[in-house]
Image (cartoon, rainbow, N blue to C red; front, side, top):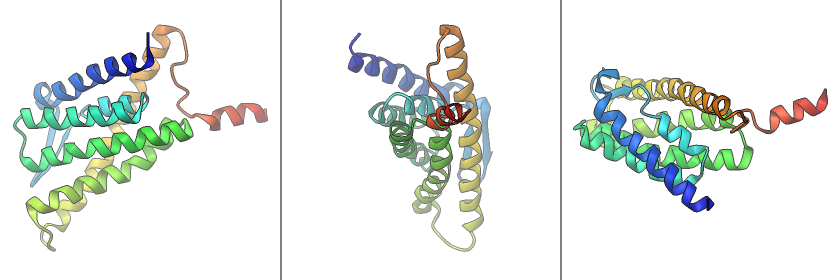
Length: 182
């Protein structure tokens, strides 16, 4: 099958998941007022899409935004979901360059947290009174990003085991160089 067609199919499937998760899995949502929420597994489609291509990651990020919009979450939460477009794209670029899922997750975690805090500022303003809310958003987003990256990693490893082949070497070149040194 043509690589572009495969990417389109993956983009469609992961986008569908990115839309469905905030709509159907609201019971997995943690809310810390004023605008921080964390829906477990909401980042997983984005993280899986980073392993495919930057284009697919951006499309899945758009799907995530649509999912949170359809789910009826407040505008700041939808804006935070829109950051998945940038985070997924950047993560996919890192993976393309370095071949390391772990490096992509580590680099995009603070980007994700900071972007989520920045997009909430127009909704809550920026003052000393809301500063703790912004810190909660940054730290919460990084923790949520980390938890979902572990779920995505487990899915990739399970798929590799089921297909009896290494779909992706999560540590990339580092593992290869280390093996050569032995």
